[in-house]
Image 1 (cartoon, rainbow, N blue to C red):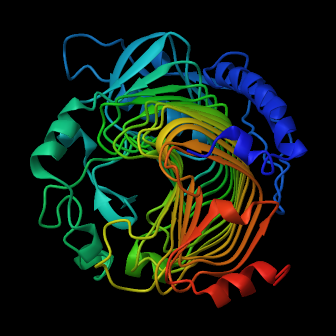
Image 2: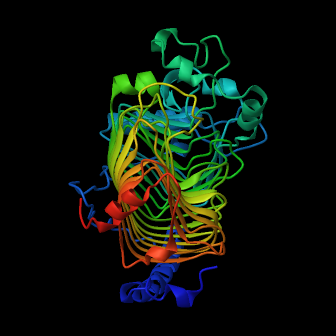
Image 3: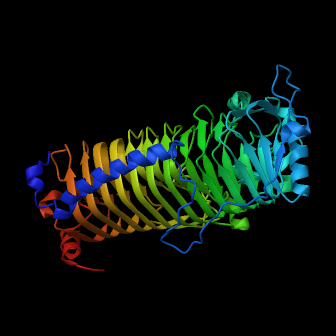
Length: 536
């Protein structure tokens, strides 16, 4: 074991100050958590200060007119499954749209409905004390509508709330939307997922994918905005949806804030999915999900590459993710990345009990690029697998097709407490990860520290890792800067190990040479040349 006294040359004055900064961060995280659980969320939307050009987003505005569904014949839920408010909600939406827009009110009480389809200039408002239950009869979700199912376009059962090519639209209020998803989950567990990768290879009208195309169909998403703009989802709670909850597809100028998602029992119960959409703000939300809390996507394989619409200009801030399960993460990029993901800023987040924290997942066949991503001020505890994970072999190494590129990723000010493996970066043999910065990262109570494989131009600065296994292992990586490292592990060996024939061009500032280990693949000449270099 490398004792703390032996590491005195490693600890810089800056790092000592970092513990004070982390204490402040923890205090801030408590405030963030309270806000994200629908307490004291500010009404005003704070300015967006992103590290890339992005305009300010504003709530859509609606005329001061209210269309109460009771005035259109709605009655509260009874034991009769046919006593639904669907027709009344539809009539209120049509009337509000014809009048130039307004609020369609679902008041306090219990209500039962089939899918709700929105129009432009409509604010669907679920009042506090209202619970809207969605039908458990799959036939009520017909006729089929166009949507994107896990990165692939299809005609399928209608989403529970669907907005198709609309402008100026909202779902608001402090009420509850209950998807009653158990029958959808049972159905999925019996029949399994459809073959989506094959579907991308044939035109939409000919693919065997979706309801009525030679198969029974797939579970719908909860709320879908398709090719829409000026969108707001605010205040509502989403319980037990069939699968993905808030799904933005080919849309822009969208705000999702102060939303609670409860989908722990739902397979693929992702919280917010930003899919080939741009200019998006996600803030003050609370997630307990059966899959990723917040995930950014842009289409699958051949179809995604052909459509080629990126997810771009996204800010995700001030949120919590608890008990995010089924291998998922607090904030995730991918795995459907074929349209590209560009300009994303994630900051001020708490992940507790999640399977993973910050995750990039993609693979061969996806192609395109994930680029210019910034993550700041994240506090993670009790992570099941990896806290920071870059996986370019998402479904395995045998997949073929165009290789995706992940580059220009900047992650700073992260605290990790309790994780089997803190950091795992894996690039493809033919397309390494590029330009990765990890700075001001503190890791305690870790099994393994950091595993770095096939990365070009990596900066690790002000890194403090306490782990059982080796603190940092570097394999086949090039152009590396290590500065202000504090590494403590229980191996009794050097805490920083270099291996692989392609490893080189390393700068390790203020880190003792005797605390590094080199495999036989790195010759004495390479080692000498590497550590004599001061810049590249």
